[in-house]
Image 1 (cartoon, rainbow, N blue to C red):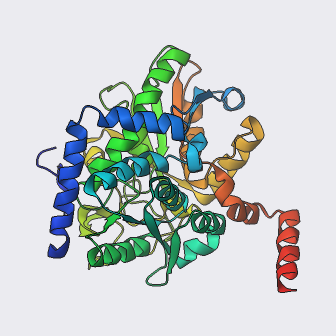
Image 2 (image 1 turned 45 degrees about the vertical axis):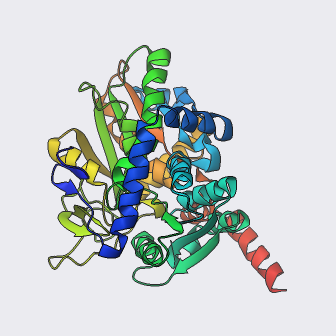
Length: 409
């Protein structure tokens, strides 16, 4: 890092003056935690007893045979408590909240996994909790909204703007500005003002630490490539952190190609070259924006990948050439989801299926001697409505209609 909070020319903390003291308090607390020799061991112990760490590394034998290319391994973050990698960061931030003596947490969420994780952490540690979620995402991720509320969180549908993730972030920032003495904003991805990108990456690095050792034990070698989906960038940075120092391992981030890069309905900032450098939501990075700096609308079948920006850490690695960025379309993602379910009995989240689709597309160019890892960042229970609709499942539609009629009665 050339200067605190920056990664090359990206990062920083472009914030209202009112938040300066709060962010400084967070920086001091986080820095103190990292220097505390007991903090990381406390964090690991909690993750191993409360969550499911270390999560398994699964050899996808059937997929490997079917595709006829490399040996495919899946890092099973879908088996982490709450069904995704999100809890890794949230539990870490929950411990930081305790160090700061605050009693309330807020969060934004798109796919809902971060919201569920934050509500879970709040219940575990005894904090009050408010979750901001775009109205569009509330509708398409209703099961997660139900669980957040049952866990004790207040879920606030955001009706401004495009009513998706970026709008939920804006609303959470407004709340934080008004309640900073008692409230910590549990930012869910490696974006936002310093120290959030560093902090989220730090806690998610537990994934990379684990898988680096697991692949050596199971395959006897480091992987040729590691794939991860990229929205904001938390799961990608988590697993990539295990291999940044090994130049022989290629790192591939897969963004949301939506209805195709030739359309306006996608969320690719780096793979398409459509992103441009700007400042928004407290930091400098690549955003999907027009010539006047106004944020563009995005699209993805996966609610967690339709964000307008990307982690400043990933932007720096992109410009250095350390990470290659690709895109997967909605159609490719749904096909990858179907294939993994049929061949391995695993239901991936639609976000994670982007990484799978990217890996499957490139499998033909690799040999049987190659080993690849795909970060299965979450499970697909939350996507049942979207997947069933996309697959045109008649029995599911009939079930929904029947249930709706029962409720109306």
